[in-house]
Length: 219
Picture (tube, rainbow, N blue to C red):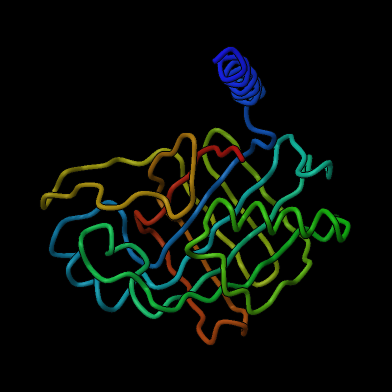
């Protein structure tokens, strides 16, 4: 009995220590999709089968390390495309059966850092960053200010306004949650998003859509 209590005490203390230490990586996150996340039912219905199959997700590490590998200031971008809308399973529809991703990793990262960034992205968006068809080091410019998030990474780019009017005209509401795990998030206005790469078999460019989320993450 005493031995059991002693073991329980050790495990409890260990658990408390792990919780007290908190996440090892923190940073900023932004995503854009090819379907609106804040809209009315009519637009949602029209986009459900034909749009929303693609997205761009971008992370920038503010501070942290994974397995002793420092990731301070490094970024990674995942460009994904599925065989159906990436979000309608949240509303009771079918989830994509196939989702392919192109990973654009910060070209300043060493091989160990690239692998750590990929592990982090897979952990934060496991349903989408799984079938990686291409991993490419590129120069990534990830900028955040009081007005917007902007990301430029090779063939992928996005510009998301942080301040947007969420008018309930035509019954507009928020339908979806971010595609990746976040600590805090808000809906943004996608001023522009574009993907001109060849790895996914599809390309797109869109402007002025309420199709984005931005916020913070931890891992």
